[in-house]
Image (tube, rainbow, N blue to C red; front, side):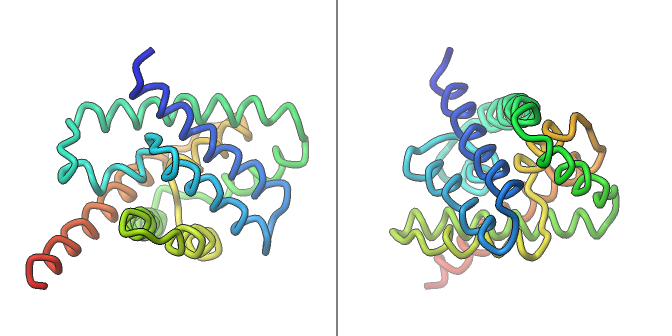
Length: 191
């Protein structure tokens, strides 16, 4: 198994633990504990689609590698969620209730783009030497109800469901992150 795939599965595992903990603990503590997932992904340099999509151009990552990361994150994330559903019946209800609020709509798409913006900022700040972006940004997107495609596929796995809004979420996360990449490069070129 290639390193690309192993690191993508490991990233899904860490994010799935965050989803599990958030589902068990709930608000207000759960969103802060969820941040451990992205912190682990960054510290261990794992492959999380939402953490890589805003940086794949400057790191010269082939687009096909980014798509492999996405597919592996989605497949392994759903599997982890599915397995977690057998450990705690309460989280199945939490996941099902959450999925029932999702819609294939412009509002859901905008929430997905805003999550992409926050994910870019979290990783950008981590690369600049501070973990503060992760520790504040992850709870922020959760409290705001923004949509993260890998967290959502894990939630779908827990609920044993699929939802067409996942497509909007993937595209929105990508575009929000790429928008922030563009803005940050424009700012750096002027500074």
